[in-house]
Length: 217
Image 1: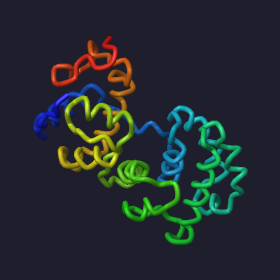
Image 2: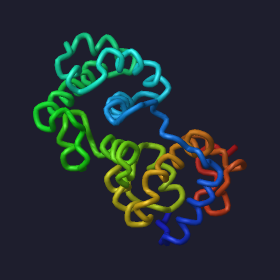
Image 3: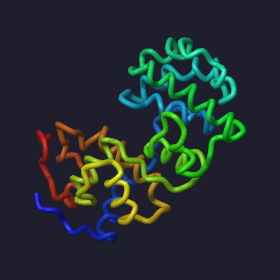
């Protein structure tokens, strides 16, 4: 399909409609503080938020802060997070991330993108989740849902997460970035699914250039 020349005005009108449909679209990862959010987001890679939320209570009880995690045995962390998948790499990242925070940031989570992505296991997606939801620093989170729906709506032509992030940040005002990600993720799970797009129930079907993509319901 030929890329559309989407305007900010058109995109914002569509976003307004989606936000009205999902007024309380939340951050789906259960957390009490920035440390817990960072850990949960690292664990969410290739794993459902539901599964992460089942695992984290015991993990947070055992390792409530970066200092305790920095001194953890990687094998113990592996056992606690095994059901999230890729548990060996994730455990290594969690311990390495906590160690870096203790050694370089006095055990605090940095609030700048460059410093966050320098931590083991932290990419731009994770950094944007933490910045936007823990520190109220605008961040455009791009996961598979956000990328898919942004392309279907004509908001981006990019195929990489970083490319989508850059185009959406140009298209939408910074104060809308964090909630935009929540709304698009929620819409992607509830309606605009990857293989089965529930177009008949879509609140923005009249504004979508790809109506009927996938197996329309």
